[in-house]
Image (cartoon, rainbow, N blue to C red):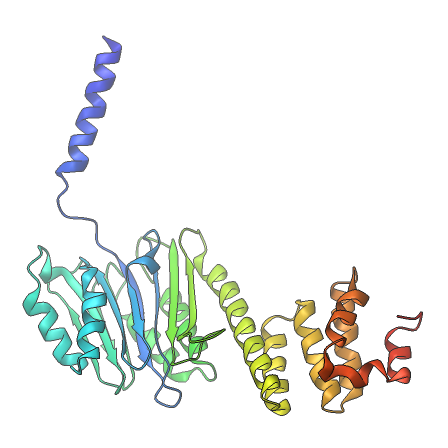
Length: 332
């Protein structure tokens, strides 16, 4: 009898789940933006929703960036990118998406689009979960639903416009400002950032400069910050290698310095900068960076150094007895 009662409860619970025909809203706050100077476009988003990065942000270099949320039609993302590639503006894409949407819940949707020409378009349906709304600037749109109030997208826009430096840093500042202004009224769980620029990513033929996701965390912003630092450090490390191969040593050093800035505790970043400093004739700075690299990772330092120094570009350092004596007073 007890087993039958237990099974009955399970069946009733399952029936309740399947009876829910409308999926829960992707309650979130996001910013979609473009940097006209660099051509970078991207989306930053946070939510009390698992793996928000797998649903909301979409972007393609030289095409556009899209955030689709609330009573979300995930298909909006790829459809918007496809339409933008055909030459439609952000406003035209938005109108067509809404016109062609035959799925239930259209009046609860929320979407923002920025195209490669800098056009910005956004829509918050009248039945999007409250508080819901959006705000726009010349190069951005900030929006959200189930928020604590309109101060969230307003704070995001102000932070994006007032923050200097990296485009990704400006997106992160906007996201943090939205959270500080109240954010998702239900709390925190996930966050994501996607930034694209033609051939701007690491390695070969990669347009994604930033793509980081925190899927499930009580403090997604701290983890997103950590991942962003790593992503930027690796980006600059990649730029350093490419500039070095092109014999543009000043550009290589500038990139290596930025890599160290974002990864100050990474021994390899300091070692890369040290070798570039030496090639440029700045032996004092080179020695300082080598010492930092060794202090951060003393085990195997000599071997790692020797492996790098065997590169033909660094032949002169192996012949510099005075420098080697300072770096390896006990011998190499």
